[in-house]
Every structure is written in structure tokens, then in C-alpha cells.
Image (cartoon, rainbow, N blue to C red; front, side, top):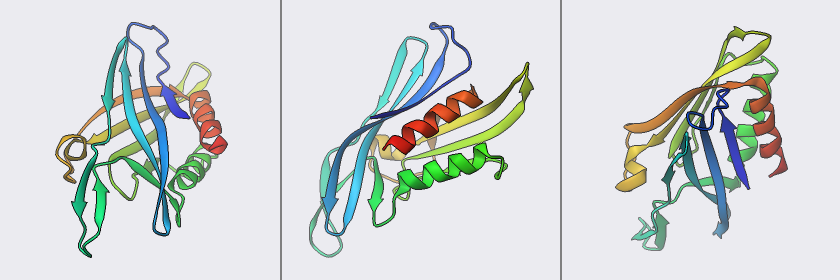
Length: 164
């Protein structure tokens, strides 16, 4: 499954989009994780941010995988949390949407934009943690994209989230 959010610009040479591509799920002890990779589209260029597959010894002496982009599914479902936040935002119960997974690898910010023509539009900011993408460190430094999307694009993304 993929979550995709596209800009209102439909020119294939300059359209911007972000995509979260779901990979495998994994159960570890009493937790379930949904792994993913992040794709940015800038016209015909694609920038991919993939998990690093490294192991480390945890504080309690067990081998743990690190450097993977993952949403928690159990005991707390972050995908459901994102879905609920987006639904509340679309119903105008929130002034903005801000989402960052518990294992911080990105931050998504969506804010309303004045009506352009007859359509409600939204400013989208998506920042990928620069440390996690290369060095397996949590940093506030990031690389990202920003664009304007339509209300329908957010509704489509909500539908994608609710199918998961």
C-alpha cells in the first residue's frame, strides 16, 4: 500500500508529491511495526529515503534492529492516529495538522490556505529527519518538500489511510 499526496500543479514536469510506501510488518515482543520508505517526486525526479538495516545491542542485552522507518501498530496504532487527525482537520475541528511518529523519522504539517477559485486548498510541509536517513541518529535537522494540495487530495489520502 502507498499513501500519496500530490500538489494541485498537474504539470508532469513540475508536479510535486510525497509518498509513504508500506513495506513489511514485523512483530517484536508485544509490539507490531509497519515499516515504510519515503518517496518525494519533483517532476520526473524521484528522491527515496529508505530504511537502514543495522543491528545493535539494546540496553538489556538483546539484538535490536535500528535505522528503520516504522509506524507503531500495536499497542498504539499510529496510522489510525494519523487517520483520525486528518479526519478532524478536514472537518475543521483543528487549525492545522501536525504529525510525527513516535520513532521520529518525519514530520507532516498541513495548514489551510485561502480559497483559490472555488476550491479549498492546503499548504503541506513534509520534513524527513536528516539524521535517520543516513547516520541512524535522531536530529532535528531535516530535508523536505512543501506544496499546495487540494481538499480532494486530502480526502483521497484519508481514504488510503482508512483502507489500511
